Image 1 (cartoon, rainbow, N blue to C red):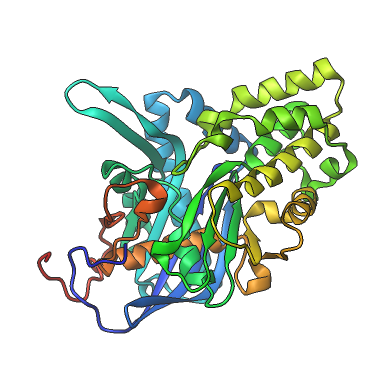
Image 2: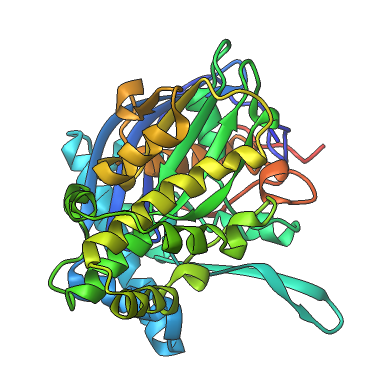
Length: 408
């Protein structure tokens, strides 16, 4: 997927790029400022600063409702509103780094996913139509910051027959591939996903896919059970007081998504409010405590991640975990049991921020898009061929493409 897709080779120079990301949990906008330099056809990343803009509890509720029952007028408004919040996050991380917007070359914004239909719907005359929708208007971001903004990364892969996800494995390969150790990179956000990097392999050799829910189900259980008084299980403390119910765990492990072959991706459409409400109802009928349900779902998250070995051929020498789930001790303890004796490390142990990595990934995707690189991985998403990901909204100084040429 590292083929040239329409632009010429660039001179080697540093570019300062902001990456913006809000995940399935819809709790904050993460902003990472990085320096990227092109050497030998490969982008090398140096983290500079990180900042975040948290969503209010009310906004988080509105976004969850939007993903399930959104009206056109509300989607239209929230697209522009989140554009303002994403722009604020970009300006905040730039100030945090003691830089000025004029010093920043580019912004890459993933936006906020409110619906994702990777399997598609068959329509007469055209066949299966796959679709996805991320909001957080990039024109607002470019206007407020004056910086060229790349957004809408998923649709081009889906137009090429892919699922549009996961996209971060491209960055996992750049950051974590190793000549002598095969690594499983795990991201536990709202949804959990894995990237298997065989030793000595490049982007083409990796395997990656979503494994199922991560923090999203756990957070929703806490909200439902406490009637919104709590929004998540801080540190996994509630789960660690509970007991894993083996019968319920067995039912959860039999979920159809877990046994579906890759490529596969998922979200609230599969593990959202109806799924959680059924779990909470099950708690009432079986007299399980909220702590027991959380303990069981934390174990489910870990075991679902472990089930990736069905589709990964080769040894796993190390497991490297990032995302918000890294701070849930119940999940991390369960992961260590699932993957023993292989060591389970965190992104922070390897010199990367667990909080900032996904935002960093979209900074890289934006940068490499302007280099003309195809940054989807067809073996991961199911796309028919490599494509350039992202749409460009120019900033006040135009698009920072150094030397364009016709496609070859």
